[in-house]
Amino acid sequence: MRLSFSPPHTHHCHYHYHYPIRFHHSTRMDAPTRKDKVIVIMGATGSGKSRLSVDLATLFPFSEIINSDKMQVYRGLDITTNKIPFYQRRGVPHHLLGDVEPSLPEFSPSDFRRRAADTIADITRRKKLPILVGGSNSFVHALLVQRFDPEFNVFDDVSSSSSSSPSSFELRYKCCFLWVDISFPVLLEYLLKRVDDMVDSGMVDELAQFFDPDAANRTGFGLRKAIGVPEFDRFFKEYPPGQGREGKDPMRERAYQEAVRAIKDNTCKLAKRQIGKILRLQSAGWDLRRIDATEAFRAVLTSDSHGGSDAWERQVLQPSVNIVKRFLME
Image 1 (cartoon, one colour):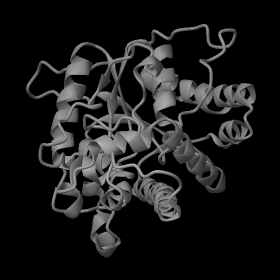
Image 2 (cartoon, one colour):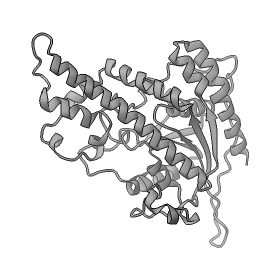
Image 3 (cartoon, one colour):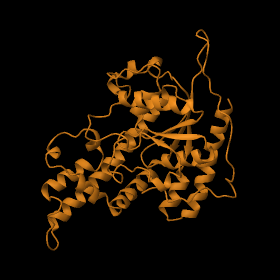
Image 4 (cartoon, one colour):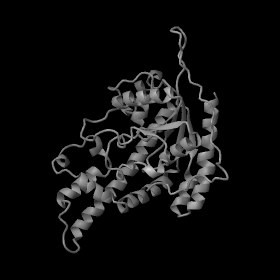
């Protein structure tokens, strides 16, 4: 499920911003190089990052979005990986979203660092503003730090003493960090509902088409790591797609519900891990501006779409707009 908010109210957000981005490309070899500006939207899975990125790109119409979700970079499983649908992108260019062929070797943080850096360079060369959005903090860290060591996991608690080195977190871009946060109990309730909505939207049929009996017997890599794939691989091995059974089968229904429950459990665990990594980056000195979206999500859970839209605009969108405006004028 995506946030079912309507677009920003026209009587509040009738404006477009045309603040000039201060691009810096030195022509002197000895002149200091100024860093390109990047908006970075972070948050746990399901926290509304994609929605905020499109809202901002619509209000700042010189923006382009770069996906930093490690499952959404792959082509396919659009429902399972929760890619933002085309109609919700509102014409905003999106990069690294469904661009990678899933049969290729795993798309690593190093791969993302190289591809996303090239994309940022292209966007800024065209005097546009890059907006980086996604929940894979290993990708975000790999891209943004000045010096990246692919053999070293800065989020590994075992190496926490050395990973606190400033060199691990020094940034190579001038970043404006927006952290969309939600009260954890409210987020968990929303995630459980979102999984149910994904199932209703055809996720199981999508997974059935993706099912590969041979691959299901091996450790997953790439897109096969997406939450939903391993959980339903186990189900499909027992009850292969296309071999439906007549009447009710209690054991099949039980296995089906166990697969859905496992998706819910693993999604909630993912959200907890993502928040932990965000707090790690914040403690390392990244200037994350926390945006509290709890009220908007609470309204959505009570089926108050109008109240959700009002709360989103008041507590999420408008504070984010103000932060970005100041950042672009620096």
